[in-house]
Length: 73
Image 1 (spheres, rainbow, N blue to C red):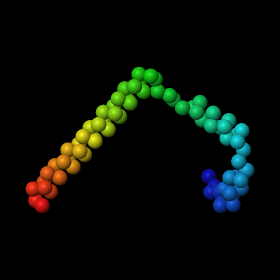
Image 2 (cartoon, one colour):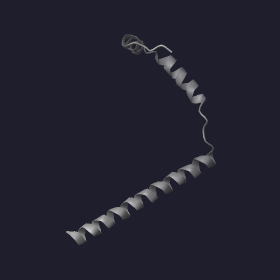
Image 3 (cartoon, rainbow, N blue to C red):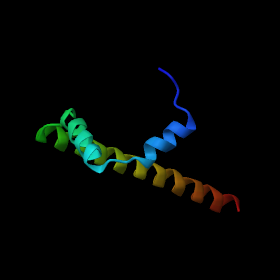
Image 4 (cartoon, rainbow, N blue to C red):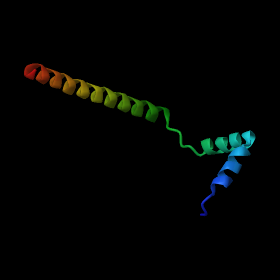
């Protein structure tokens, strides 16, 4: 695959074709494998739980360091 020169990139950018862009976008979205409702719910719950776990861990470590700093200083 040949590399595009800077002028070729600029020329392509200047000749933006909105209908073609939206047609290609629609085609690409048609290739997407969308998750099922059950998969979406279960993965969303997993993400929320991991965020809560991470936030709790960071908070506990922060409180520990604050307690240690209070004892030292």
